[in-house]
Structure formats: structure tokens, C-alpha cells
Length: 408
Image 1 (cartoon, rainbow, N blue to C red):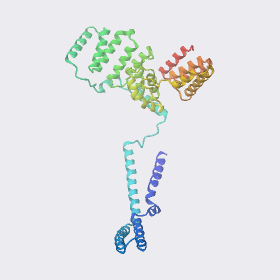
Image 2 (cartoon, rainbow, N blue to C red):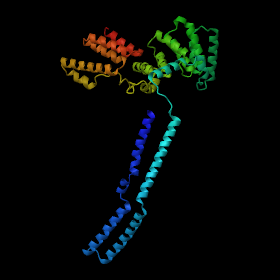
Image 3 (tube, helix red, strand yellow):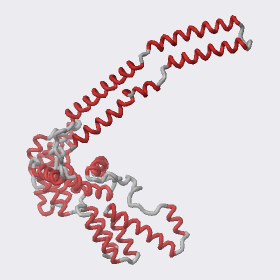
């Protein structure tokens, strides 16, 4: 069906482009320049005769003008005789047809080489199954580390390298010292020894045991991703799970969770995770810059082509009344102010229930409904917001915090 439609459209466009070149009537309607010149020169000859009869010109002047105009008439007549209008139309049509055929053939060849003409349809179920297969087929940490490209780092100062050698020796003598392991992991990373840094952090987590916190596991996962060349391996995912079980709002772990989902072709699941992180901030968090760079494409792939990231200064954070509206509200009566607030709440409710929104926006709606005494509606919007934010841990947390603050 696709090829039939593409061929039909190509034929229609080709015919529309060729018609002006092949239509004889259109070519005949366009008067040659030599014919126009010839008509003008003949009019000038008649004008010379009229001027001579009125006494404006002398006989000598009239003869001289007739000679000059006659020469131009002969030149125009020769030019007109040399033009074969039918042949010109035919040659223009043949040239246009040839160029069009060449262009269509070149476009077809380019698509055949760079495109995917035999690619079958990809329904949603098949794409999800392919993404799941890619998720299951991720290489193990050791395999990913062997194929990862080495990290480029500046040549370190020899004195610094000597100090790190001493640190390695100290850690080897005290392998259960958390402080030494933490320092070793940090400095191995600075030297570009990613596997050594990951190993030191893993030893640190093992040494801490039950005392290891969410940040310890998140840092181990980050070092594993670095050592694997940016790939979130199953082992790194396990560390992310441990970190998020301890702290569901851990920004570093959530960023890598979204990265893993994006790597396994699930932008629909990665987008709400990164969107929540971006809107929650803070702006100087290390994961905000890469999210800002990648989230426009991720939003498009997730089906949110109209998504606009919040500005770094918070100017596009949650929408509300502008300065003019606030100034106008100061001059309103209590009844008019209540009507304005009710209208704003109603607009927010309509937007969220039709196009969705962030957890903070759902929370603001719930709080506004509670303040205006619409408790039943506030509970209903809380349930609806939770249903809309399924899979968005940060958004759900923001909504639940707002609900708790409103007494729900």
C-alpha cells in the first residue's frame, strides 16, 4: 500500500511539473522578443511618416531615421526567422523530462542505499517486545568493561601519582578502612582508572555492609556505568535498585534509571523520570545539564512533542497569575477575587485532566481545591493525579507532599 501511494504521488507531481513545458498553447501564448521588437519598429516607421507630413521632420532627417529603423527591422526579422517555436517547445519539454527522470532515479537510488525499503511495520507490541529483548540482552559488567573505550585524561603530575601509589599500599594493608577506600575510588577516577575506581567503591560498599547508604550504592552504580563505557549493565541496575529502595528521590540513581530506560528503547518510561528530575532541580545538580541536552529528543520519542523544559531560572516553573493579574486583584472586592481564583482553579483542572501535567501542578490543584472547601473534588483529583503519574516517582512524590500539606 505504501509503495502504491508513493508511486501515485510521484506520478502526479511529475505530471504537474512537466505540463508547463509540454503544453503547446502556453508556449505559443508567450510572444518571442524579436516579434515584439519588429512590431515596435514598424510603429516607429509609421510615426516617422506622420512627423514628416506635419513638418516636424525634414526629408533628410526622415530618410536617416527610416534607414536606421529599417536596419533594426531586418535584424529583428532575421532573429524571428531563426526561432523555431515548435522545436523550442519540444526541446524544453524533452530537457525537463530528462531532468525529472534523473532526479527521481537519484532520489530512489539514495533511498534504496540509505533508507530501509524492506523494513516491515513496527506495531507497538512488537517495539515493546524488541525493547524488552534489548533489555534482557545487555552485556554483563565484566564484558562491557572489556569493550569500553579508555577514558582520555590529562597526564597527571608525577608527585600526585606517587601519592596515589602510597594510598593504594595503605588500602592494601587496611582493606576494610571505609575512608581509605572512598579516597582511593575518588582518585582512581581522577586518574582515569575506571575499573580500579569501581573496584574500590565496591569494596567500600562491602566494608560498610548494612551501614552503606543510598549514595554509596548510587555512586557504585555510577562508577560501574563509567567503567562500562556509559552502558547501564544489569549489575549497575541492581545497585540502582538498592539505592532507590533506600531513597526513592535519589537524583543520581533516578538519572541513571532514566538513562537505562532510554538505552533500552523505552523513551515513554524514561521521559517522566527525567522530567521529574528536571522540574525538581536543583539547577546545579550534575545530572541536570545532560538531561537538558537530551530531553527534547526524548520527549519527542515519548510522544510529547510539545513539551517545553522549564527555564534554568525557574521562569517557566508552574504557571500562575502574572504581575498584572496580581495588581488587578488588589482592587477587587472579596467576591470578585473569589471568582478570579475559582476561574484559575477551573482552568488548571481542565488543562490537567485533558493534557496532563507535572506532579507539582497536580499538587497545586489539590491544595487549591482544599483551600476553597471542595474536599470531595480534591480527593477525586488526588486519585486522578496519582493515576496519571504512574511510573513518575518524582511526580508522585510531589503530589503526595502537596496532598499531605493540604491535610489529605
